Length: 169
Image 1 (cartoon, rainbow, N blue to C red):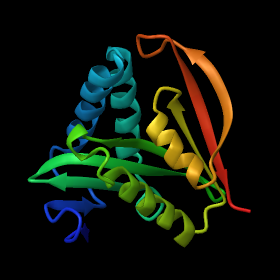
Image 2 (image 1 turned 30 degrees about the vertical axis):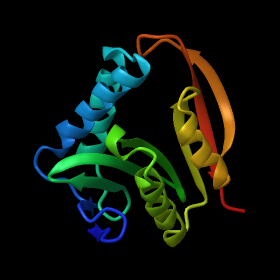
Image 3 (image 1 turned 45 degrees about the horizontal axis):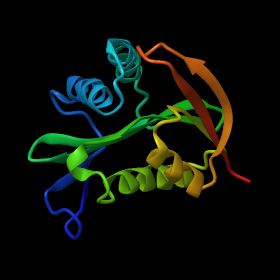
Image 4 (image 1 turned 90 degrees about the horizontal axis):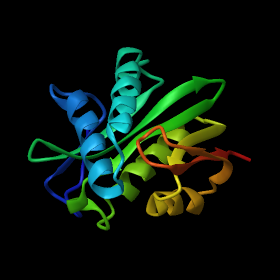
């Protein structure tokens, strides 16, 4: 567990799940993506299905989660899924509105990238949508590149899904 006494004394960063976290992370994605981007239930179903798969197949020592909490409430998270052969996928990156623009997302992402370096991953990829510009800027600033785009209406609205890839050179 990391403690952030300087920036946010109330925040704890956990690398494990506590009771309620699994449902809480799914709920956070469903609610915030609907409020912020009008995503429909298809998105929440997608997160519920893929996050349950991540949790049920979690490989201790390979997969990783960082959950930011304040007062027992989830304020953000990011996860790494080991895909073998020094490849990993970034998933479930989110922060609550009360912590956006305050550096919590950058902190979670920095912890993710520190883990990447420490474990000598060679390739990282993630899928996002073009309307998530702040997150895309974080990725681009550390060397991720847009690798693929495709139109989709899976989440109840038409949008452009984007795949970003980072490679260690």
